[in-house]
Image 1 (cartoon, rainbow, N blue to C red):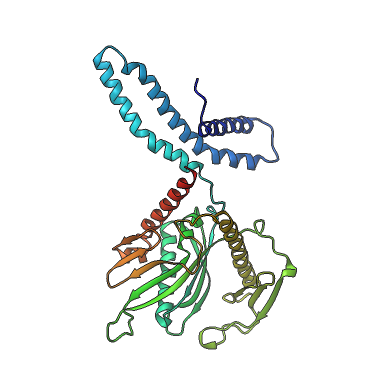
Image 2: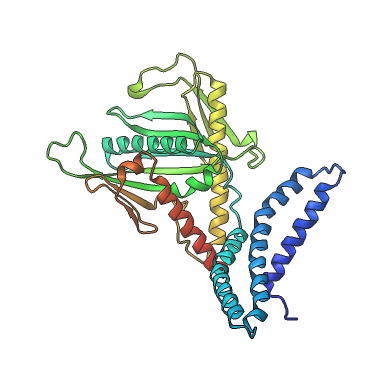
Length: 358
C-alpha cells in the first residue's frame, strides 16, 4: 500500500474530526461549548462533502481498472469511456476541495461600514460620490441587504462631500471588500458648455463592522466633544448640543456624527464607525505582516490605489486590478452589473491564494 500524501493525510484528519464532532453533538449531554462545536461542525461539512465527491470519483476510477483489462472488447470500451469521463471530472473536484481549504477571512461574514468621499474634481467629484453611494444602495437592495444611512455631508452645488452607511446582511463584507480604493470618473459635467470631458475621483472605504467583543476600547483613550449641529452653508440643523466628535487618542482617529437629533444616538453611531476603523487598522497591519514577502494580485485596502475608471462617453467601466472592462456602465451604476466585476475580483483573489499554496 502506497504512503498517503500530506494532502490526503490532511483530508483524512478533517473527515475524522467531522465524524468526531457529529458523534459528540448527537449525544444527549449539554456542552458548555456547544455553539463553538456546532460552528466547527457546520464549517467542516461542505469541505467533507466535497472530499466525499472527490474520493467517490477516485474509487470509481480504481474499480474500472480491472474492467479496462477485460478480454471482452465491449466491456473494455465501456470501461475506458467511463474512465475518461471521470478523469475529466477530477480537476474541478480537486479544485473545489482546494478552494474550501483556503484560509477564510474572519471578517467575510461581518456587516460593513461604507464610507464614500469626494476626491479631486470639485463639484463634479461630489456628484460622482453621490452616484457611487446610490450605486451601492441599489446593489444592497438587489441582495436583500439592509442599507442604513449614518451620515451625509452635502456639497453646496449638489452631491456629497462625504457619505457613510451601515450595510447588514449575509456575506456583505465578503462581497464589498474589494471596493475600497480610488474610483475615477470621466464624463462631461452638466455645467460644461463646451462639452469637454472632465476627470474627477471619489474614495471608497469598506470597513468590516466590528462588535464590541472584537475591539475593546478603553474609555480613558477617548476624548468626546459635543457641539451644535450645522448643515450645508452653516445653517443650524439643531438647537441643542447633539453633535458628537470622538477622538481616539492612541491613534488620532476622529469620528464626527451629527445627523441624529439625539446626542446619545450620535455617540452610538460614532462609536460604531470608530470600532470599524480600529478593527480595519488591525486587519491591515496583520495583512501587511503576512504579505511582506509578496504583492497581492488583488488590492483590497490601499485607499490611495486607483482601482476603477467609469468612462461615461464610451459607456465603459474598467477595473485596473484585473484588466476587466464592461461596456455596460448604466447597469453597473444601477447595481445590476456590479456583481460581474465583484465575482471576477473574488475569482482572481482565490486564484492568487491557490497559487501560493500549490
